Length: 322
Ligand SMILES: [Mn+2]
Image 1: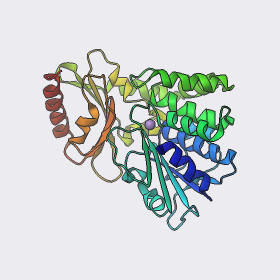
Image 2: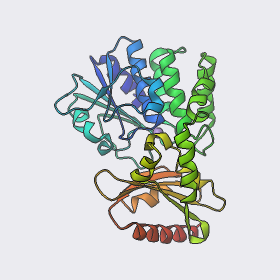
Image 3: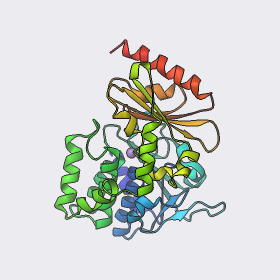
């Protein structure tokens, strides 16, 4: 039996499903989580989305109710479903909740992924986990989905592909989007909210951020430091500027762009964006991280200059092989 069918069977047997995703969730993580919840609820299966932190304001339109982590607030769920999460550790504080469930399921699309759970359904060729949730919705609901399912899936598809711009987009990605539109979803309402509405604070911040971009290796590497204190000056939070790594990436001649942020526990978090030539997921593994070919991340406690030096060396080495 295929993994998708196994997941369907397990979900149909569930009394209550707790849905989890990765920490600092993006549009795909949240869209996939709330779409999964809506699929289950359409079938009368109780489901709860669990987040480590309250839902970012930008994704409030997905909100159909959720629970926030609290110590000793163990979910009363026999089945746990992790979506868009490449490793158990990426579940953050919710990892122990996930692990305590009788049945553990996982739906994901990360390339450098560490399998976990009882049924593990991972397809790196999917542009977004939401594309796999679409498959699950079809399998469980047939041809027509409730609106919350459509909106969640479209949000994941759109945000993980830079609104259908990245190389991860396939014919299937468009077919899924087309089917959601056929089913009467208002795509423009979502894209207007996600991409064409900006707070003044953010607009001002983006101008200041552009001033701070540094270039290395003859302009092949661009680095932007976006520390919490800098964002605070403008009254914004990281969720407001999810697409920030794309800004230095757009610079002419840049092959790899790096966004550096404070890390909650140790050192800095480095988010990488690239242009096909270099496998960033492999690059990130040198620092104990991972991700996709054109988008990866890692955390390092080393001095930043040292990390940048190593990155330049790794990039130069890899360019000699292409
Ligand atoms: Mn994703």
